[in-house]
Length: 378
Image 1: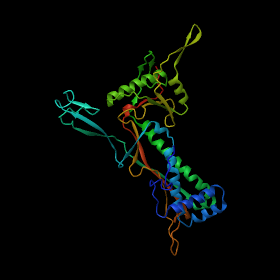
Image 2: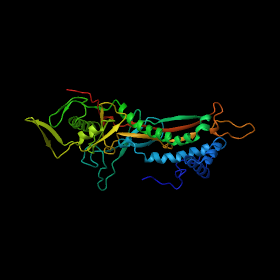
Image 3: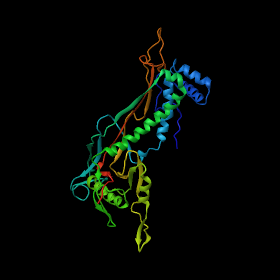
Image 4: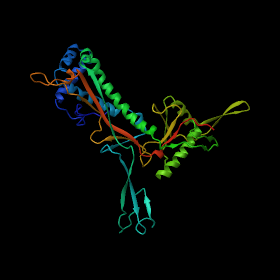
């Protein structure tokens, strides 16, 4: 359900008013834009006059931000199915902190040196066990500044102000959502430390080659190998289900393989079906991604099913929002007076918008990700 705001133009303080912008001016700008889009020639003419002689452009940027950011919040991203979110404080590589709960022999517990993943008992009259945090510096776990300038000539504004204004929110929204998808799936597919599917034997005796094409047997072997890798590398049990990520167009086949409960056999020239009531792959969710190509496929624990995070999308504290700004390098009129950015720049008569987002993604636990190139054979 979409969130509602008491102040829809600042989103209750998420995007404060910039200089020369105010609620009254943004409301006026919204009325002009909505009139333009309805075909009101008078408001279109007033918009075109003011965009080159006033601060209307700054208020238009405020309006577009206030319109698009809630749409980004409500957008259903494919990458949200596999990645968590984490806010970081700077542009440096980040530490993944985990608690070390240790206690000494003869104090608490069973009398042995132990490292726990839970809080120990504290017997009456005994001191609390001491703990600390260990920080694992993960290379590449850093945010980066991303953005693009959108240049519009003064002539284009005069010829088609309606078309340009109508497309700004769409372009802004598309660039932002594509970026969020890109950072997560690029982090996944470019990581060279993930587990590769090794040759193995399924429970039914089917031999599975290394980098096997997608099949029920290959999935069963992959799940076993990934669970073992997570246990051996991170001391966790992965029993909460898995996401199977395949190329676009491979989803229907993958879902058929995951949900099929029957095995076809030819006996005495007749086709028979042996149906079982238990599906060991029932916990696998299929996801299509444009960043996975050909026959390759990935297996990842479902988000939130492991204590140690697997993949996170990162954002910079204080700059979590995607930002749209207007360049104001138009100079001044002779005799005084500020020129609107949409009159065009001093050098080239161009108006510029700038989109900026500070984000990226990291794979904290590469050994909790399994990849098959899908080209192996016996």
